[in-house]
Length: 396
Image (tube, rainbow, N blue to C red; front, side, top):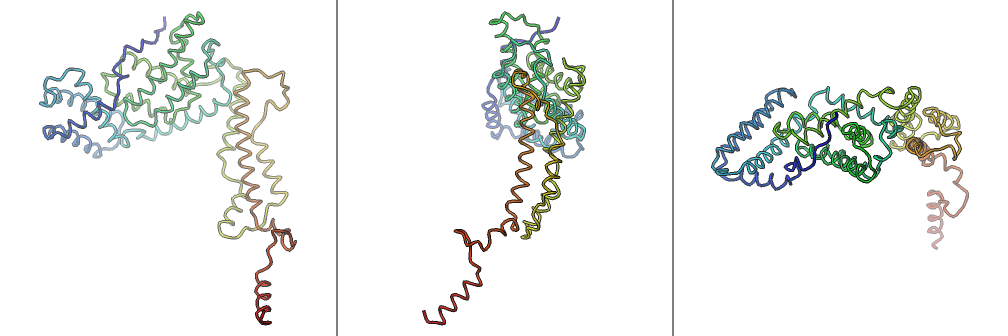
């Protein structure tokens, strides 16, 4: 039988505020009596720059240092008679301080991690264009867009923090939203909870919709640098599930979903075409015109053949499966695909608008306005000077 998500109360320490603990730790470190501790911390941080990055070894060094410092804190006069909770708060402050200082040295420090981050983000961006809840067999009773959006936003916050505890807190908040959704469904809709069989598909879908930046590196950072004594119970359960969701997405294919294999490949190909369009370099004709304008020489405007070539190039880069559809044939499930196609159209419109903006700003395009004598016509400067000299010569 699948394990069920633990109660949020089982990890109350993670839910406590972190800022007070951190500032209390800093205040104590400013005390002259803490000089020996300060030296140890600074020495450890500086020593990291002496060695090349090695995530596994670095993680072990950090964990060993945390254990050594915990013993030192318990024996230190500043924490004499301190409770276990007070020592734990001090260690939370120490973890945040050390890992914030070492962040640039320890986060996404290997080319492999960076490559994996990029690959999974690109794959998720393709899946976002067509994946629907039914493809992951998520029951209708668990489909709650408002709750999913809250969970997505928590995951997207993760990359804005530097401390492993705060990154983990974002995962916890996301998973708690999902867990509450499952509990509410079980009570109000008489849905029998199936443990991870219900929880994991929703988490996978939320992760795909959120596409959190540097997902792999964030998870690895938490695994390596969050104090091991804190990766237990609810925290361990939720972290493990998100790692499983990431692995599922990385290996995902048509057989992983409830979708026809041909339909899956067609959708992925269409998404690749749309992404290629969005990230393509500017058309050479547009780029050439932009360069000339920056140099003060607008150059020739687009010819009709240039415009036709751009239009054909843009039109040929993606397909529109709903072009022949009638309104009565559409279903609610088609909304997400239509949204993806809409974004594709907007991207194309933006490229096309830029092309014609350059066209409209080109000097040769305004030749037909010169000499018309209209309201906005400007008389040539040479003519103005001659008229002025003539008037002065007549003494007027």
